[in-house]
Image 1: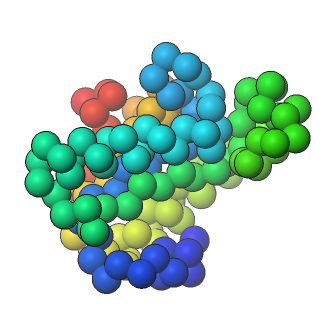
Image 2: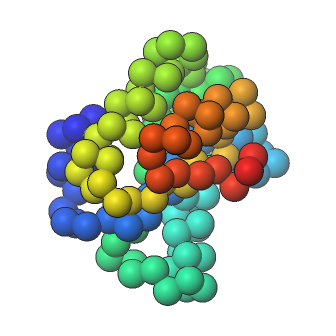
Length: 138
């Protein structure tokens, strides 16, 4: 994860919107096809809040999908495995948070459209350590 973060060409990122695609609006588990929600949120922040568009980063953390239709679709671009869960899932998100805050210590990370079971748990896990929020549950 750290090497992927350092592959991003921007020296400074002010805002990241991250999703795992597990609960996109009222549509449910869209897997990687949920990236549009992260892009859309950042578009809003750029247009309405004046955030520099060169200093935002939409992120999709692909941990699989539990959407059986997507799992059977040969054209689905994401990981065609059932979602990680439990400690394995937490380990991936921990690695992501450590990587982005190592590279960009002042970034703000918004968690967007995570399943409720993870949204609350991740908010509690990171809120006192990192500059992050989840407007779905706060």
